[in-house]
Image 1 (cartoon, rainbow, N blue to C red):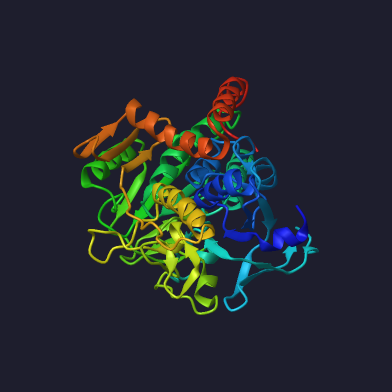
Image 2 (image 1 turned 90 degrees about the vertical axis):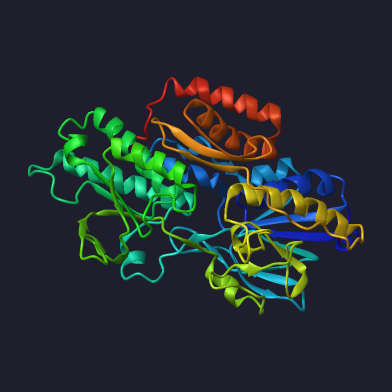
Length: 444
């Protein structure tokens, strides 16, 4: 297609290649992009995609990310959209143009210069980051699990701590092998159970001087009075019981006031020694959203959107997923919760909206969130959850094999949205076969 014809095509730019953004780019590429009806461009600051709910497994070492990461350039080639590496840092609404900051290599050399991209429809899907609430020392002395790089960094620190303890002549010191997780939401809870299993697996691979039951300690700190405070009490109580069986130390009703290189201080005066602190308490949208050409944001930087996911001040810009504040019907002033299922539902709706815009229609669909429940995976030990909706006639508590099968199916549904049924089935079979010849934990 000639450049003049391409100029006349509708340009859809999606910023953020998380679960929702990547699914939307793939759907639009397979339809509008493949037929030459529009130009679809996906922009992300990373070269590869890993489903965010898997990051705690990468951090613990129970999953090798190389077997689960998707290369954006390859996905773009296969599904008829463009991928551009970079991080958006400014917006010019009058010109309908975004700016992408320069990209540097690990040595600080500029690889890709600053660029600008024109759009007819801009869709923001930049997700969320961990909110440290300005707690003293949290940013310097703890690790969040927002990205694959952060998860791998924590795993390296954990592995090095175990190797150091194995080879030192003096006994393990207080806090040396203690992991403190701040925040008992789904990420914190799942990570604590996964770490309980993988530290024991690691010790079995030749780390004979380490006694996991004596030397390795996992602590979970939560400002609320129970784990999983956003989920139903029955689910919370079941998880609490399982964690206590695993000897995870639970500090409920404790608010962190400072993080140091030696440990964590709480408001009650308690000090928990730890050289390995994970911050998993609270979320916010990226800070740069507060500064992009006057779009309306809320107190946690989310772009405020209408029911059709258009931003309130610009009809050409949409936002969805964790970075968007969309009204949750029937829940007073609450917004749609930051969950993968919400982003998936919104991506499906925006797929229709983009087609309507290109066809010149203005009757865009409006978003109604359907909560199908929550699942919490405690690794090798159990999975629990609650189902909501027509199937359960309200809320139904599930656990064990049924819950675990449903938890795994969520990831398979994401893969099918990206690759189709047969590719996902073949990939699953290949992983089952190769898993039998690999160590069950990442040993480096």
